Length: 152
Image: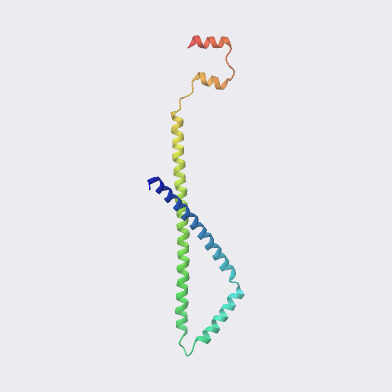
């Protein structure tokens, strides 16, 4: 496989990765919004009551004491905090990739502007005759044409 084909494959894979990461971010944000809106005050109270009932029923003689509940709550909160940190780092990485793409586009625009400026510098300056032709599109009269030929 030649080098250009490999470059095309890499560019395509990068584009697919970018699209998938944006889709993942959108789906995560949608899940987060749905999750937060689902926890209404009534549901929170209901879950608290059910948890208290289960804690009372599952504690046969102190096998699952308050210290263990605190340990479990600490573990779960650590898990949630870790998940939130990973989502935040993913979002930061996506923002960094977007910034690098914007910087690359700005560099491409700078290069194009420099090339256009170089091309403009390479064009010959208009002569007085061509400036007259642009200013006055009418052909010269016979006397003017003769004068121009004799002067040149």
